[in-house]
Length: 325
Image (cartoon, rainbow, N blue to C red):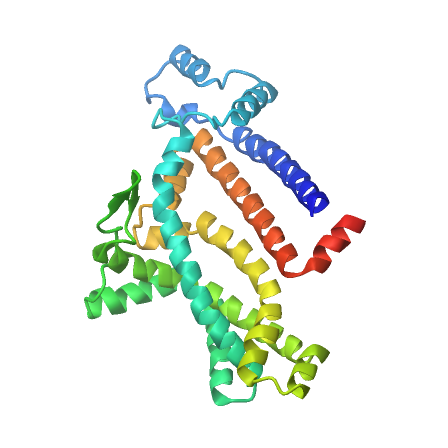
């Protein structure tokens, strides 16, 4: 297990280093933020002074090494626009996005796994066919259109749920949490449901395919021959083994929910990290964009690392293969 951990950690560090180079060079080699940040009537001398103040007068390679050195100390730079540490800006909006992603993940798993297992166990039933047809809609319908339809139906027509904002929050160890208030839950439900439908459709298809494959294995037939109850066979022998690929995909999709909830947050005017990114792109606030992308990269790397550990814990053969490799 130790060899497995060391190898996975080295791979994760390499990925972060490569992505830091790609992200920084791609962002700092394009455009000129001085044109947006300086006053319209600013002279060339004033623009040059602003460039020196922001460190943009240095060669690109020197700016990168300054960024890399600061990043190793946990400093991802200061925003050109807000004049505050970028990490602070991201962390201020992180709780809202985390709540949205976690709720969407719970909804997608709660909907997707039971429906997918049922569709795998009884593939010819009318309900299974309905579930699979519904999963196609989940893949096909655009995220923003689903959000707009939910707003139209639940907020405009029925007036059951609010259409925008985050709602009331309570501070838990200094972190604003809306999950613990009724008003916060009402504001969270529609954006979380919008974000979860695509993922639920994905989980349904994975769970169905995994269930059908596992149900045909010899150990499941042997369990039936031993006379084990149907419930025990499904829960212990089928669902447990079927969950290995599902856990992997869910982990990766959770990262994408956090990083790419921009559209959902925009449709529902939800004050998460997505709005910060959009504002930063419009103003060419390079440090915030780079910090957001690096935060996303590290998030994916950490989630992959955790998923690999869970994968190895579920299936010991993974550890053996890595140790021999």
